[in-house]
Structure formats: structure tokens, C-alpha cells
Length: 109
Image (cartoon, rainbow, N blue to C red; front, side, top):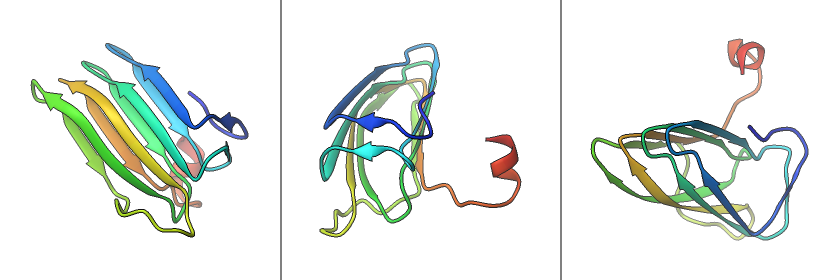
């Protein structure tokens, strides 16, 4: 799990095969206007929380009942960070979202 303040390189690679990964980019220092994230969440799960207003293009290779859900806009804008998310998702799950502050989610993650 990565959260709070951390420096994000232009490209991040994460292997969470048979495991779980949570990346929280809300307080991260992004080093480029476009951040590339490559993940392998096969038979595992991934949760990416991007800053409010940021956009994300999600294009993972999915098969074997893998699921992916993105609750954010996919079209890049010049005034907001953009994420390009690629990789593998065979039998796993991936969620890309903004996290609103307040409520029960702040208490329980």
C-alpha cells in the first residue's frame, strides 16, 4: 500500500499477482503530467485512488473472468493529471476511482 505523501516516477510497475495492491495518489508528488502505471493483478486485486479531477485511461489485458472498473473520466485534459494504466488482469479485479473525503470511508480506508 502506498498512501500519504510520496514521490511518483513517470512510470510505476507493480506485480500483485495472487495478492493485493492499493495505490493512493491523492497526496503524491507526480513528476510528470502523464503517469504510466503497469500492473499485474492476476488472481488478485488492485485499488487505485487518483486525485480529484484527474483522468485515467485503463487498458489491461483481461481474460479468465478478470474485472476492471473505472469511475473516472478517461479523456485527458490539459489542466489535470492523467494516468495511463496497462498490464494484466486474469481472474483478478481492478478498481480506479476518486475518493471523496468524509463519511465512513475515511474511518475504514
